[in-house]
Amino acid sequence: MNLFFEEKKHVYWNPYFGGFLLGIIILSAVYISGRSIGAGEAMKDTVVASIDMVAPHYTENSNFAAGQKDAEKSPMNSWIVFQVIGVFAGAFFSGILNNRVKVRLQKFPKISSKTRITWVIIGGLLFGIGSQFARGCISSSTFSGFIVLSLGGIISMVTVFVTAIIAAYFFRKLWV
Amino acid sequence: MKRSYYILSIVFVGIAFGLLFLPQYKVKQGINPEILLQQLNDPTRIIGIDEVAERMITKDPTLLLVDVRLSWDFEDFSLPGAIHIPLTEIVFAANEGNLTHPHKDIVFYSNGDITANQARAIALQHGVTNSYVLEGGLNNWFTSIIMATPPTETATEVEYEQYMFRRSVAVYFGMAIPNKAKGSATTKKELVPLVKANDKKESIEEEGC
Amino acid sequence: MESFISTGLINSEWSSVFAVGIGGAIGFVLESSGFSSSRKVAGTFYGYDFTSLRVFLMAGITSLIGLLYMDFFGWIDFFSFNIPDTYIWPTLLGSIFMGVGFVASGFCPGTSILSAAIGKLDGWIFIGSTMVGIFLFTILFPLLEPIYNAGNLGAITITDVLGLSSYVYAFIVTLIVIALFYLATLIRRRKTTVKY
Image (cartoon, rainbow over all chains, first blue to last red; front, side, top):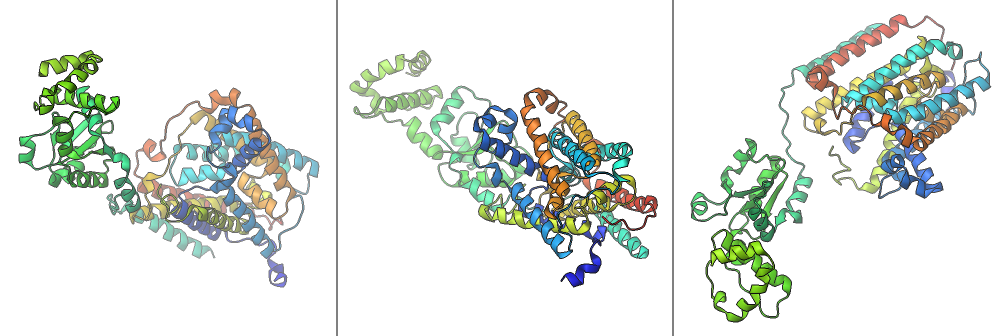
């Protein structure tokens, strides 16, 4: 198998084909489950679940956590968490097939690992806070913007994109 | 390679362009059969006569009584304040939005047969969700309220209260038929203190008598 | 939204199996399209790689057009979707946060999971710090609550605002997206293939 894929190590699918396939998958997901996609929610569920595990009284007292916590079942049981487990498995499978699985730190060659890690942590913190304010991360706002035509989703999508283009100027040392 | 992208984009624009020519109406699916069945069998659809009677007396504006019987039955006798929509016309009424009152509880009743349930089923399929069926229909109303039988001497206080309430309702709406029970001395003696417990009801009782 | 699972046609125990299955398909497609690489995703903002933009917009128009047709044929009820409320100020604030975080790290939560799955350490670090961020938000929630609930416009859609029918909207969006695809090919820098 490796022999077959060796040549294509860094060759990805045609983006239009991938996008079309993703669209079809979203359609079937909507048809089967009526739910959206979005990894941010799964992370939130996990955080709420782990807070609940460590300090059960906290989630009861905190309005936010209690609001997110399903009264009947553990957040770990929710659809979105299973979906993220699936995403993880699917990505791993694709990585194996294309010989891309390797423990490493990906970065622009001209920056140090320390710089990369620092900015990843800052980016993650910003994403964690931002996705809660915006009530969803990019994938879920794209979903709600494109599919349910929610105004908030479209505003979020456009704002993220415009902010990122502006911020790209200041972060250009990290990438190019 | 480049030409295939042009073709693909033309295909996509074409498919999207096709959307513009879709007729604005949809293939009408109505309510999902599973959910319809569940709502049809929902036990909370039955509304008790005592509850309806109380809401009629307090002139509850959220109550809408719908008589689904034939027109001569309706002219013969009906509940006060009820509107008359025969079963055959429910579908038109629902489609025209005459049954769409989001803040009202619509109570269908017939003579105690299946007609009221049928009316509710038709209304449900046309989007009327807040509908109920009067328990036992007018027959039950007649036997329980108009012909209310006094409870036996061993009956509980609750039963006495219910009897008194039903009696008052019948008198309030001027439907009371003087029944044999009124002559019975024993029951009358026991009824008096219960009546006095509620001044309003006592006055109603006196007027009627 | 009525679906197989909410109506009970699919047993709720099976719903998690479907969740894993759909997630797996999404993960496979996204990884194969190159979303697991933060440099590829960040390329959108520096003009050297528009893959992520293409995939997402293509998925968006495919699903939008597909859903409208499915709605027309009565397979789903498009207008019964649960439209989330639009909270204008927190959405803007949060999106600015996410935009900066996106460029700083090259990840969004979804792509970080893909990265982590193929063994990239930065993906794992991003997942960890995102969770810390959510945790911070949860702790500070009493302070942030006024902002979080500010400017609720209710469950409005873009078609309400523009006064268009969703069919016209879908057509206009398709045209815009195809124009963007063309624009992306124009401004892509003529770089040799970057090895990610």
